[in-house]
Image 1 (cartoon, helix red, strand yellow):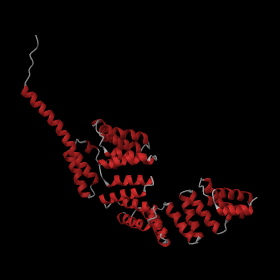
Image 2: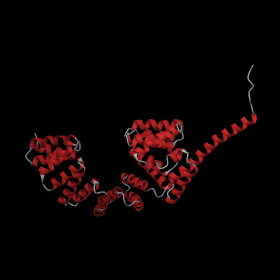
Image 3: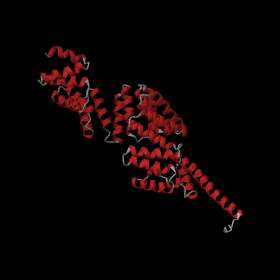
Image 4: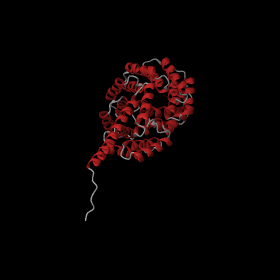
Length: 374
């Protein structure tokens, strides 16, 4: 005989309603928390950011968004700990995988592991635009520009913001699509007129296209917004130098060096300006100072030229040789070293250099070789 079931339909209905309210109440809480979190990420006003932060912590203490609050400022240990907490408490939420991807990418220099985590995040939420942005960045760093551009475009289709347009613009710049890159940078500026990095990126792209006046306009705007970035002054110096304003360029390089005393490119370019002005001893001072920071083939080349112009052929030959040893392959370099070797009485070595320069298309080297070499 079957045992009689104690079935209470009213009780079952109430229990079911409670379950549904908990289920959908939780979902709506996560959606509300997500909305506050997204607003918090892009809010510029510090007081409003603090208000949104308090609102999130007070009203949604058990939300995944409260757990990841401030993840961009977390230390290595904090990021790993919070990523594991989120993965444990919210195993089907993309944020845990995303945080672990950032940890692998930024602190373990493991792009492949990071990629797997970002892809896992997309398995749980195919609209998780942040993962597309990170995949774009990884592919850009690895030189897979076509894939990087596609991922960046996917991210933009899901979430239009200035940083994503900036990212795609940088990728397109690396692809040689400077005009398309500028369009992206201008869109980033339209969305956020205070994005100094977008102004800088636009200035650099215009500089690469030799549109110097427009480049100067954009870099001026970048510096108005951010006066403590050495790269901005360095770029403005390069633009002014190409606009035939060497003294103004020197001032910009000096600003770069004040902000960053180890900015060897600014030091090197200061030497180059001095060389153009035929102040070769000053040029040698700057080139030597730059080499103390960064042993770069181009600096050896430039310092060698400054020695060459002073008829210091032994020193010039040494610098040209160091540049060539560092695989700085240029016909001019072989020509100048060959000339120095000839002046230093090394005729056979001089002719060998001139032959290489001639084979690379240097007309002066061809003439020298015909006249002085067998």
